[in-house]
Length: 136
Ligand code: 5GP
Ligand code: ZN
Image (tube, rainbow, N blue to C red):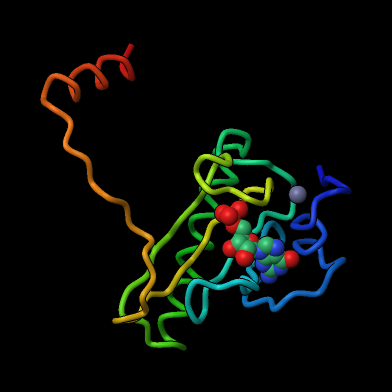
């Protein structure tokens, strides 16, 4: 299914031009137009799934394999020093486009980006409680 109001559906299916660095039957990988770093790319399924909770398992498996292929291609071409895979779900997590996408973000020494988090210090009791809540 495509969503006629979704910009990433239009880009993924070639209705809106993009800087494509990989394409197959199920996915298009494009350069982000507001990149964190040089080579920041987005893996877009051609079908519309709003987020991680909607995409079927087999499609998600294929998406991460595509992310790996593109990561290798970017590393070889741009000689980055590291690379982050990021995938945001929901506004609270920073998702701005409601069509699932995987960010492939090459990292360079001193690129001055801050993709990692500030660690907190829960007690052992708090961690055990959270574990029990998640495990039911
Ligand atoms: P999110 O915040 O939803 O995880 O990521 C959305 C990403 O899509 C952002 O990094 C943003 O720069 C990128 N983006 C939004 N609209 C467009 C577009 O029309 N073309 C391209 N190439 N990237 C886009
Ligand atoms: Zn879409």
